[in-house]
Image: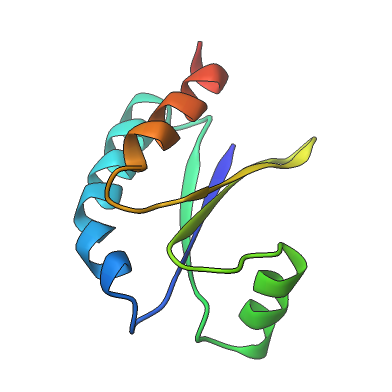
Length: 96
């Protein structure tokens, strides 16, 4: 499972949640290193990142996509201050 986190340098919520998100990513990566990867994508980057954002229908930041290699996108979640716990719960399904 891969979590794609879409962010932007001008996004205040992205900045304020980045430490908590990174802690969650480190904890889950440490516990389930072979089963989960975390990637961050700056939507203000290249034309390729803009195409990716559009093709995955990412409308706002910070947004997380849960991606499984054999299935594709399993879900999209807004990664605000209160949603990191929801992300953890949704990922538990893959680790049980």
